[in-house]
Length: 441
Image (tube, rainbow, N blue to C red; front, side, top):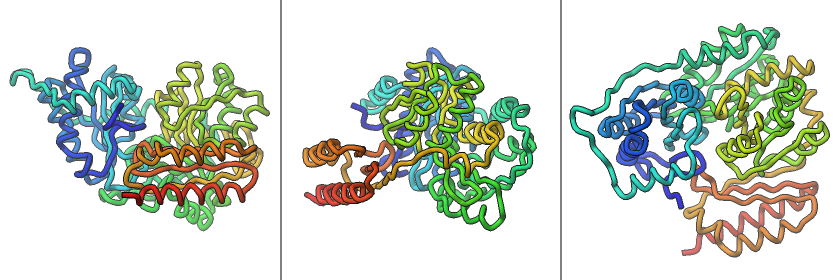
């Protein structure tokens, strides 16, 4: 069982669980495990104040193990994934994605893809058993700084420069004081889009702070005040994207997936006529896709599990309600910028305003609640939680998902159905039970 890696790499509060010692050990473990196959480790980071510190530790461990290191500086997660695919190498993104600044994380990529659970377990064994290896001093790796981001920028521009014809849409972009700010102008300017960027003044502590894809109010107010046609929200490392329509209403990942599926089907890009989502996606999305004769498959929460199912079923479109969407014929991972540009192209292709299109997608009442706890594994394995879950699973036209967060010390509850009173009572009952268990000595 993995102890360090969660659903999206290693992630925790910096200088508590996530330390420079841990980062150094991961760097050395990567050199140990991959050194015979790959000669260079690429490192990118978001804008957190702890990023450079962790990068130096990670790089030191890899260099001491004989692996060359190239720093890409501040760069998005999908950009680093693209670089490792293009260069046929490994890489690590230092980011905690949508989490607040006190968190950070270490996400490992190999030739464009996040590494498997089995590979994570091998790395953990090296790190936890302290099986570190130091090379002869003449074989110490070389460290260079060369962002390589221009390759990614050129690739994205080449994908959409002939596909997006409508340059009149007035677009507001919230980059969450994160990594998207390092490339957004280079891409959107070259594509000739009519846009303005907001929340692009990172100071190490304001990433995702009342902005970006986890805080919609700021950009929603800007859109209504300034008369924008739509808004685009990224998270800290730009692997996810949400939209806001001209009325200030959020357009979540489910809706973007639904509209993209229609376009991809018409363009004959939707391989096997199949879309992959998670258990968190709304039943309305399922109804909409089935109505349009598109098959839907569900996985457990986590983009890596969505990707695994996409590869297994040879699908090119999948993602999560949170806006983490994978266009597998464009990228090997969720890419917020690709999602944004695909969605802009979709609006043009379907020839309807965003606020009109989303009204065509049914939406069941759904409630999401996150409860901070001391021991999420203890709670999720408690028989009382399992019993209560089974009780509500017998209800008709109702869904309940109770799971531990893969990135934070929280239990996440999703309730969905046609009766809002049942949703409210179910959520309350789980909240009270979880808090009661958490308070037990």
